[in-house]
Image 1 (tube, helix red, strand yellow):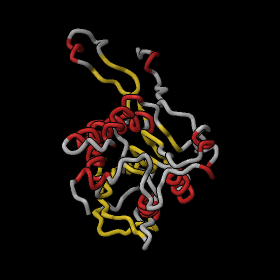
Image 2 (cartoon, helix red, strand yellow; image 1 turned 45 degrees about the vertical axis):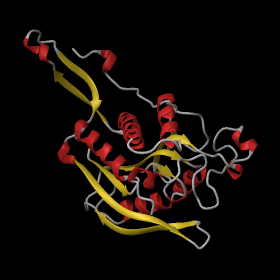
Image 3 (cartoon, rainbow, N blue to C red; image 1 turned 180 degrees about the vertical axis):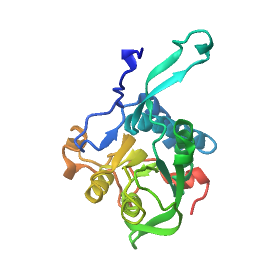
Length: 271
């Protein structure tokens, strides 16, 4: 007899209040914010920053899988079944038959994507899990402003039909790279993804506006919203309430407060 307590799952991630719409999830997680604060500190370098980002993506990925992936009914015998025929967990779990892809966007997204890939292999049928790789960089003008994203290379499986496609990329700054990646996955490959999900440590108001202008159905998860250059009025209001007064990017499109160049810091490569 199934236990009614586990007949369905009502899991929802804890989130801060905002006005960006239902596809944006700004998590309310004090533990993650504590670790993220350390990761962003000028006093934190390798190997500490690598361990912190790895832990933060483990936490973020667990939340996203629990909240966004399909659930199914399972009947799982335990070791006690040798003594009691009732020793079977009958209830809800993430559907193991879910097809998924994680996309590593070099440089900063390489390690986060590997973390997501490993977790999905634990939870889903590994035969249905894939990791793709994109190599792109910011395209800037003479003033140092980001005007787009340049692709250098890619290793991508062709089939995305019915798959959940994950884009783990620490900094959601201008949105140029994410818009380019999601556009490719939704228009240039075989089939249509079931869902596209971006996983970030930090996002800006500018990023949220840009990606949802291009891809309103993109689901965005972030541990923190940075809008440090906003007006006093905007900072006193709910995020998204005064969009014209919100700003999280400086003149050369780095995030404030932000974390500096995360790709550079993670790889100790300052080019």
